[in-house]
Length: 414
Ligand code: ADP
Image (cartoon, rainbow, N blue to C red; front, top):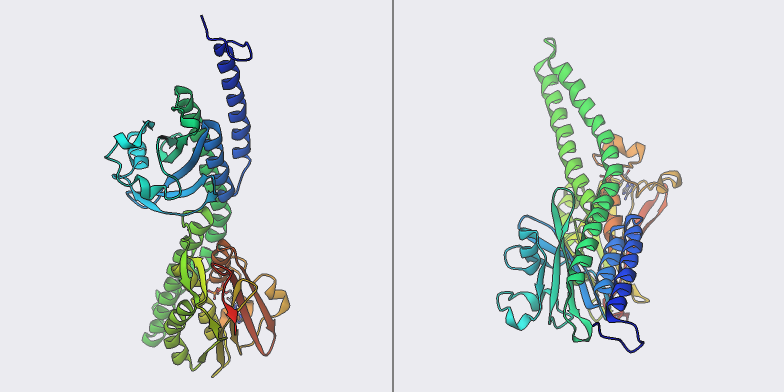
């Protein structure tokens, strides 16, 4: 005889109704996931769905990153969604075990599981008591792991939880792969198109070098040209990969305190040599600020942005020109400016300046470039919740700027 619940409905019926509601919800979520084409939005939907469907306090998604590691892509807990790309070793983590074995793992009581030493570090914002982790499987591989942490109201995970989370993880895996493919397809076709120019140049030069009537000195010049074009191909490939990783979400930005003054000095020190070689004066003009200007971010990527703006300002400057690196603070933001005294950029070009592979036609003749640096910079700045822009007066110079939210809204201009 089944138990009769408080409403007079047999427990078996109530359970059936509950699981039906859960499958309907799962179906809705699958539709939502397959319609999402932005990776961060998708990751957030996945972790929210995982916590919601299993009735847990928190949930996380980890995807395979570099060889032998998994990276936390997104987590949700009562404090909200967190994108903190901590990496864990495959052979030391629960997620790693799940990915390697391709099976779900249910930990009913963490205190009984001393082998998972890294648990607390993996979930810093919740006290893990129990956990269900399932593999994220696409047709031919396992791309990560979905974890549901702390079943609410002191309940235990059920078989139904395992089934539901496994189904969700499979849908999520396909959705993640789709977004990655979507983001890459556009970029790859543009890249292949851009490769044609240096490849055609190399082919043409090779044709000339091969001719018997080409003299030694001329031949030397041709070989130099081939070297230059090959260097351009290499740079384009590296920058393309950097952009592709950012766009596909494979490069996750760190969120650590970064001292902006140190960052600017570091980038300026690196650019100084090039400035000296080109006879350009690089001037640092920081508004005095107390206390230190701190943003939360990825120091390496942010340095890449500053360095790109500085090298552009040096490359596209007038002889013996100036480059001014400025920093100002206000309204909870820090603003960095790189001003040059170069030829400036025409308004028609200004509109496209942050587009991938865009180069101002006149500059192509006298400096080498790929047209990817500014596209990468924009991705990085926007990935930090900031904005980037440019102002230019043709004939007198250009100012590129970007602004980022301060870590704790502090720092007043004195
Ligand atoms: P790259 O410098 O490798 O071509 P970027 O994306 O950094 O790629 O820049 C795109 C284009 O914008 C450059 O090719 C150049 O035509 C123009 N540009 C960038 N910075 C400046 C500047 N400070 N002054 C004038 N033109 C610039």
